[in-house]
Each structure stands twice: as C-alpha cells, then as structure tokens.
Amino acid sequence: MTTRVLVTGSNGQLGQTIKELYSENKNNIDFLFLSKEELDISKEESIREIFKSTPFDYCINCAAYTNVEQAEKTPELAYKINGKGVKLLAEACLEYNVVLIHISTDYVFDGEKKGPYTVLDIPNPINEYGQSKLLGESYIQDILSKYFIIRTSWLYSKRYGKNFYKTILEKAKETKELKITTEQIGCPTNTVNLANFIISLIKGGSIDFGLYHFSDEVAMTWYKFAEQILKENNLFEKIKLAKANNYVTFAKRPKNSILI
Image 1 (tube, rainbow, N blue to C red):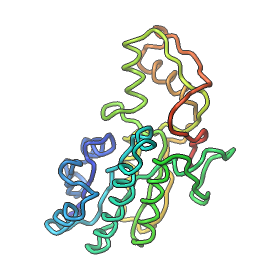
Image 2: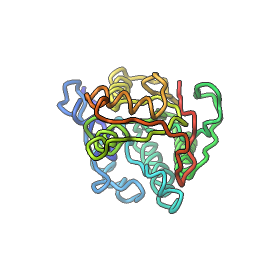
Image 3: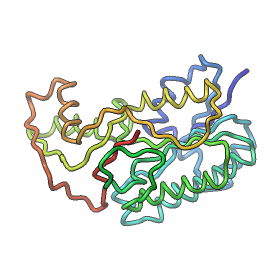
Image 4: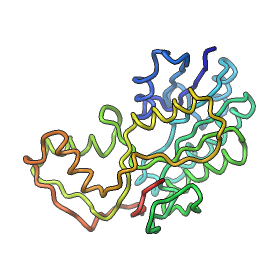
C-alpha cells in the first residue's frame, strides 16, 4: 500500500533534502513536493484546492517565514505564514484526516536556561520570529490530535538553501579573516539527519503523536561550528578565524539553543 505525502515549502533546504533522498518512491511513499509559489499556506483556497484534488496520509510542513531580522521590522509577514498559514494547514489536515508533521524551532525559548531544553520546558520567545512559530505550534495543538511538532536548532544543508554552513564557505572565498560569535551555543543539525528522522516516523507508522526535539546532539558555539566547517573543507589554515563576543543583531536571539 502506498503512503501519500504532501511536502510544503519544498524549495527550502529541508524540502529539497527530502526530495533528494526519498523522491524515488523506494519505500512505497508517493510524494507531492510543492513550493511556496505552488502552494501558499496563508491562503485557504490554495490549501483546499490541493487537499480536495489529492488524498494524503501525511503533510510535512516545511513552509515557514525564517528571516529573523526582518520579522522584527515587519512581523505581520512572519505571523501570516508561521501563524495563520499553519492554522489553515492544520484545519485542512483535520478535515481530510491527514497527519501533520510540522517543523518548529529552538527560538520558542529565551535561551536563559543553563542546561538543554526539553519538551517539558515552558516556551518564552524573545523575538517576533519565535513568537510566530510558537503561535503556529499552539494552533496545531488546539486543532489536531494526530500531529508531530518537531523543534530543531541550527538547521543546515551542505547543498541547499541559505544557512550558516554555506555562508561560512562563501565568506572564506571573499576574505582572509572571519569574526564569529562565541556568545551563542546550540547543536548544528544537518537536514539529512532530520529528513531521515521524519521519514522514519512515516515508514514506522508511528502513533506517538506530540512534541519532539531533534538535533544532532553535539553542542558548540557558532565559532566552533565555523572552525569545524573550515577544517572539513581544508580552509582552516587559509583563514584567520577570530572570536567575537559582541554579536549585534536587530532581533534578540537565544544564547542557549540546545535541545534534547
């Protein structure tokens, strides 16, 4: 029996990773990958058109507004996708009996905890992006009983999208010195590993619905991650990597993003 899976936001780094690894239907999983241009989750008619036309067993929601800095300046854009859009998607999943797998973030926490965050810790976002993602989580929990909310941290792909890993490599081509903050700590998480975890839930037919934390478990600062990236790509000897402890951004960011 074939399992039908809708993947929203498929042009993002996670969506593209899932497509690369699993789109050949070797696991009796039939995917429909839709970009934000093909499916705007903030528009009810767009969602209903897709759900009416094709029966799905699962929806992996990779669609999200992720520009943390811009979210502080124009928060309505973040809430439109991460809040309203998720609500509409959850309502469609309820109506058509679809299991929703939703990707959330470490930014639902304030980062003040001394140890790792667990699913039992109470969220307290310190920026608009985090608030919008938490709102999306709340909508899912209010509307659905069959869902997986997966919070992850410091997500990166070596091949797709815009992320810290690729930015460091690009910067290394342009400059001789990189200044990277030591003020934040988290667990860099490869999209390949998150994609495999998501598909394992589907392949195993898990009914352990609820809230999950997923990361690659090795905690480090952004500085250490940059060091690791440069060494991995044989660039460490060519670039002067300097520590910075005054990382200034418009949006407040959690200092501790370790999830377990």
